[in-house]
Length: 356
Image 1 (tube, rainbow, N blue to C red):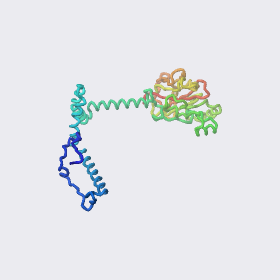
Image 2 (cartoon, helix red, strand yellow):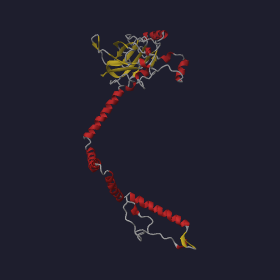
Image 3 (cartoon, rainbow, N blue to C red):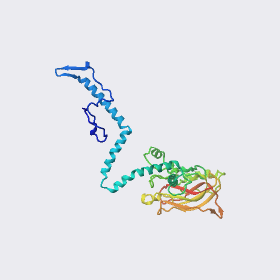
Image 4 (tube, rainbow, N blue to C red):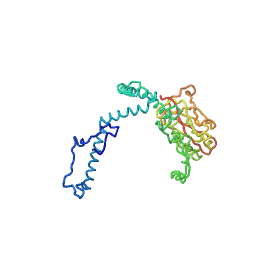
């Protein structure tokens, strides 16, 4: 008889192999006589040959099993075995039986739905995906507008640039007036004295993080005299612009803009004990050319209030003495005072408006 009755495995449902059936349709390997050993008890196979034959039989059994399990017949037999098992498991539960009966119908419906989506790229599902994509893009646009919902024309990320030098150029930073030793210490990251003006034209991350600002101080008297002498010799730029008493930030906008408002941002009082470093009184001056060297347009004087929100917006007039303000290609923030600190910190300056 066979060593293994395969009919004992109910999953396969293979009939019992009767005596004499072993080897039908399969070559039977019989060891040669010269490998037989003779003992007092009779002929027997040598241990080495037995091990070799055992390994060979295992390999053939494994290959046959792999071939069997990968075939369609095996899958069908598994399905046939599973059906009564599932029916037995859900017996007595009417809801489970109903759900089980609906499975083929649901599978058919899903295949049909998938086929419709594939054959109709402009169908309802496609439109839903388009709506989702549009919503994501709108959200990204708002984030790029830096959480105000308005495009910031003064952002370096949007193409703005800082103008240095000349009568209307940006003031020096706090670090520029410190001794060489202090500047070297900051460069080696052993001391920190704030950032340059670029920090005021970029998002603060994480929000309300302290120190991510443009730090600047009142221009020393010696520096003011030197600048005045240089400006007097510059006849190409009109003398109709008064620089800020505390500092000036001049920006070249990416394109000419009808400026509607500006926004000033500082860390709220509840997050810092140096709220008095925020700017207080300031003026806005616009220029039609990209180098801030043409006739100036006075856009008004304003005051930032540290007792209010950290982000404050200021509306800009559209006319000056009855004359409409043209699109401006550059703009200056002239800071005349702060709230009492020895230096000022400007965390963010934004310009909102409509392109020409």
